[in-house]
Each structure stands twice: as C-alpha cells, then as structure tokens.
Length: 403
Ligand code: AMP
Ligand code: MG
Image (tube, rainbow, N blue to C red; front, side, top):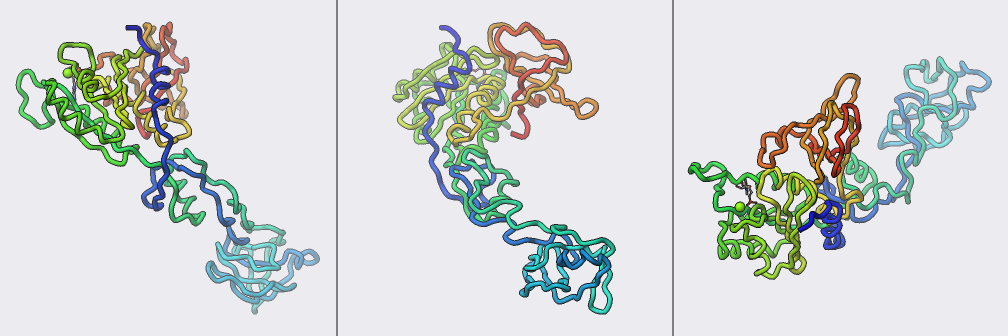
C-alpha cells in the first residue's frame, strides 16, 4: 500500500467536515470560541469628543492674540456628567479624563500647565486646537466590522466586543467528542502494574489538547482487543459528532479496530500516511459522525492529533486558518537529512541573545518516548527527502505551547 501525503489526507478529512453552525453565547462564555458572524460596531467610540487629560477645556481662538489670556471658569465636565452648556468666548471648563469636551471647546490643556486665580485660568503654553482630545469615532466608527467570522476570540477581542456594546456573540457550535483507548495491555493510571501491562496515557494528553475545540469530551475508557467488547464500546461512541480511538490501528492480528468499525457500518478509509512519527491513520464516517483512528504509540497519537485532528476541529469551527499557528525559525544546529517520509521532529524553542528565537531539534525519533514529547515546545516540519540543513537555516515549525 503506498503512503498518502499529509496534505492529501487532510484534504480528504476536510471534505467531510460540515459547515459551521452558529449559536449565540454571552461574552463571559465566549473566550476561545470562533466567531460565526461579523461583529459590526453599532455606535462610534468614543461616542463623543473625549478629554484625554485632567485639565481645562478651552477655545484655542481665545489665545491667538494673547497667549497669557486668563479665561473665566464657567463649569465642570466629568466622566459620566458632561457640561450642558456651549462654551462661549472667554470661557473655560474644568474637565476630567474621559469626560465629554463641551461644545465650543477645541482644546484641553492639562492641569500641570494651568494657573487658577480668582475664578480664571491661564496657561504656561499657548492652547492649540485638537490638543488632548480623543475625537468622536477615533477608536472605531458605527458600521465598521470590528471582528471577522473565523476569528478565535481572545480576552483582548472580547474587551473590544464589550466596548462595542455587544452582550452576546454568534459563535460556531463545537462538536461533542468521544475517546476510546484500545489494547489488552492497557490499565488506567494509578493501577498496580503487572509485568506485561502498560499505563494507558493517550487519553490524558488528548483530552486537554482537544478540549478547547469541543463542547464535551466523553472518555469511554479502555476496550480490550476483543471483537465483542470493542464493538460494544464503540457503538456507545457513535452518537458523538467526533469519535477518536487510539491503538489497534496497525495490521497486526490484534488490530481489529478497523474490522469492528466496518461491522458497525462506519465507512472507513485506512491510510498509511507518509509521515513519522504516526504512519497508520484511520478515518471514516458513520452518518454525520466522523471517526478518527489514531495510532496507539503515545508520541504518534499526539503528533497525529496535532497534525490532523486539530486542523479538522479548527475547520469544523470555521477558523480562518485551520492549520493553526506556524512559525519560521532558524536552527540552533544542523538538522540531519530526512528519508522519504515527512518528519515532525520534536524540538525546543530557545531565545538566544538580543531576542533572537531559534529552534533546537531533540535527538529522538522513537514514537513511544513520551518524555521527549513532554520536553518539546515545537515540531519541526522537515519535508520528505530533505537533504539536511545547516545551523542558521530556517525551518517551518508547529508551536506546541500556547496554542
Ligand atoms: P497499537 O497501535 O495498538 O499497536 O499500539 C502501539 C503501541 O502503543 C503499543 O506499544 C501499545 O502498548 C501502545 N499503546 C496503545 N494504546 C496506548 C495508550 N492508550 N496509552 C499508552 N500506550 C498505548
Ligand atoms: Mg494495541
């Protein structure tokens, strides 16, 4: 069986992903969600000409002839309680940061420049039109698109949405995900270990990896490599939007996940992907349910989840860039030549000297070694048949932290 290029596998997965479905959520629940419709400003910000300083609002024209002029203090403008009159020639208004600049005034002089005496104020500098005023609409104007569909919401964009007076946002519904581990040798963490047993660890990486993209993640535990038990447990997962299994995805005698999925009516593609780690990958559909069969090796499971599942989920949510963040970074040292399979090489990211960031490959290729994956901060994407790269050459990188 020939090996399928990573892009082709991703394209086949993307073909099966439904269009995003919108739901409305309150702002406090929207962090990390993906915007389904544009956020359009319904008012301008600031909604009035606002003072940028504590000081005095004046008419600059009053000071053209005589910069020493002392003008009469005729009232106050505070945040939330503006001056109701129109500033007349020869008048000033005491004003505070964020307060509306009264009509007629065109300048705010900060209080450090002011001298007040007997109800009049003068300044050590000549007032100039526009000084210390945030003009109406200078942040954003009514009708402008502030955030586009496909944006993943952050604390910063949510502060903007609140400033735009939006109590709720239209975001994409997230899928419900079910996880199932398979393998006769697996026991849950914390179990007394018999000589031939392995702790089932994949779920504990996959749950937090996928959680930001899911409405709920149900862990269906461990199924033995036994047709009936696997069938029973898998059947219970198929009401989810997305099912993720790990293990049993090779072609050994005990790798029966594929047979069981077929028996349950899952239309399945089994691929050998032209990559390392993580060669075998199953993908199929059961009605509207998408089924991903990841390899059991812990590093392969997490790497294939990063390379295929996360983009699938970003796509499901309608994110503008479904492949997620990518960096281009110089290498700290040489990268050895690659064979014919695309290599997702574990690596650390280092800041060296004056803010220069570089990527250092971890000399580890075993797909079972979780310790090196735990240390990794990035995966270097080394192309098929890459001849090797010298120190300083730039490589494409998938960051693993702060996604
Ligand atoms: P398999 O894909 O079932 O052939 O498993 C490949 C390797 O991954 C074997 O060494 C398994 O013991 C190991 N493995 C499978 N599932 C898990 C799991 N959930 N947690 C840790 N290791 C696993
Ligand atoms: Mg197995």
